[in-house]
Length: 343
Image (cartoon, rainbow, N blue to C red; front, side, top):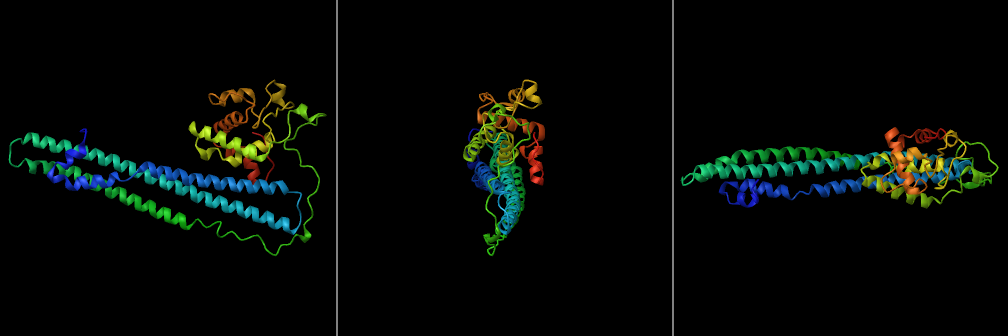
């Protein structure tokens, strides 16, 4: 392609239409559209985080709060989660649709650039053959017809596909009503029949033999929730930069695994199961054994007790084995209302 095809095209008397079409196409910014799609997907992820936060809040009072108010609250939390799931699917579909817009525009720009280069080359060749001939302009104009028609056809195809995507986006926007349709918590429910929280301790997160000294089992006190959420965010950012698709590492699913595996304690070490008997105890937030950690860690993240490094290896292992953190058996079990199982 010539160094400055636009300038050479502008010099051709018969290229006005092609030049105008090319200039119009170059105003499109596929990169900006892809960035907007990423922002839309981030909104969906944020919605998922909100749903999981509500679920964790509900789980914190489950079994301690009873009565009519507790029942109404539980019903509302389930409806809230279902609404979030529906709206999240809509938002994810909108992100995919916007990505398609960016792809169409990118392909359109590439094709038009190719045809502009072709037009300049054909017109130049025609003029070279007709050097000194009075009808050189006519021959150059004839050479421009095919590239110009090719650009017209490419734009028509792109416009048709973009109209289809626009219709899809309008339909998705109209369907984004799950939260708007969510009923308010029953206003007439009073706390009169609700019993106070009991002082009964929570059941243990994992079934394990009793030990005289809890510290010998390696499980310390749980970390504050905010710290765990921060560790998850940092690990996901590193993993995404390493090419892991964000949809395969749902932060709520990661938090569920951490809650059950270590209680949020990055120093947790399992000293009682079969892995411990083999000399490779499960360690850290996601309770990975050393060989698994070594196989799935990222360069520069080599400390199995570092919370972010441990999450990185645990998430990569879960994705390698199950395809997604959300498909870990324990996460699926909890989604069905069954007890958590280890991974």
